[in-house]
Length: 102
Image 1 (tube, helix red, strand yellow):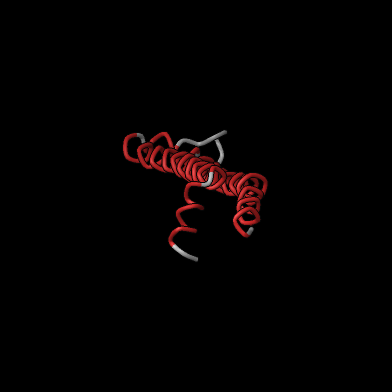
Image 2 (spheres, helix red, strand yellow; image 1 turned 90 degrees about the horizontal axis):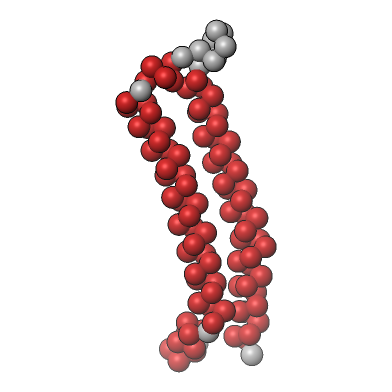
């Protein structure tokens, strides 16, 4: 592949759209996870008594629930990433490969 071929691919509208969509997906999901995680860290730092409170008078605390919710949200964001990658990014990538192979 020559530098001219590479430059043609970089200027292709589908390539530009592919890069933009991938970056939007990566950055938005990363930002969401960082907000969740740092929100938890700030809650631990500034209000630890909140996490230690019992949910219903039993042994399960608010902190345990928050921890489980963070793990579930991480799995949900991973599932969303896989869904978007399979249904949006991969078809666009295949289309670009077919057009550039000609």
